Length: 32
Image (cartoon, rainbow, N blue to C red):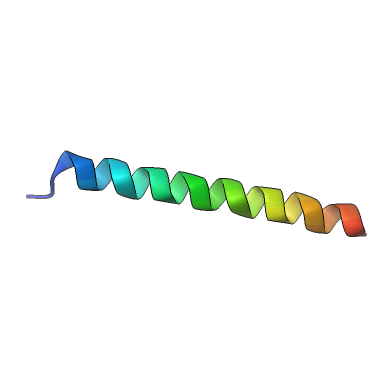
């Protein structure tokens, strides 16, 4: 069984990665 902490940590990591990607995409869009 997977510990809840692992699920929360993975979820937080995915959230931060998605946020970073959105910021990167926004910066790239500003250049064009």
